[in-house]
Amino acid sequence: MSHQEPPPGWGPGQPQQPQQPQGSWGSPPQPPAPPKRNTGKIIGCSCLGALALVVLLLVAGLLIGGDVANEPDRITPSRSAGVATQESGPEGDVKITGCEVSSVTKWASAKLLIDNRSSKSSDYSVEVEFVNAAGKRLGEGYASALRLASGQSAEVTAQGLDEISETITCRIVKVLRFAS
Figure: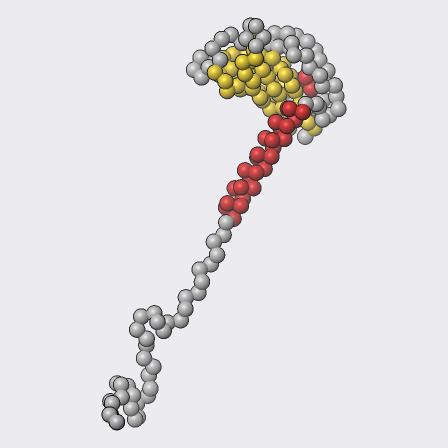
């Protein structure tokens, strides 16, 4: 048998000291990293989803038509800028005050005056078409006014996104009014 010397710090009369392991082999394990939180993504996606739902409902309302307030809601397609007709229901609340094509973008727009003649605060959604002298539809635009109090007026613009290079007439196609 061979005799080996005890390591330094070991022996009779000396306190035993545990040796520190080299590197990380003997070190205690690190706690796991905290899980990533996706709170910002969740809030952002929720807001985006809510906005998409509102836009979808407005578009669906324009396509389906009708006035939620149960007032008469038919409009004649011949109603256009410069025609002074007093209509009942939500259509009578909207008048075209301007109709033009931008010289820069070539996009058509219609200036609208919405006057809430109902007895309740209301939201409005208006569809306008842009037609040429022959009556051919060249594009359309949409405008809205939210939380318009009874008797209150708002000036809004229905903006088209089609390039138009000829003289146009603006016509109101559909007006929706929702109690807000």
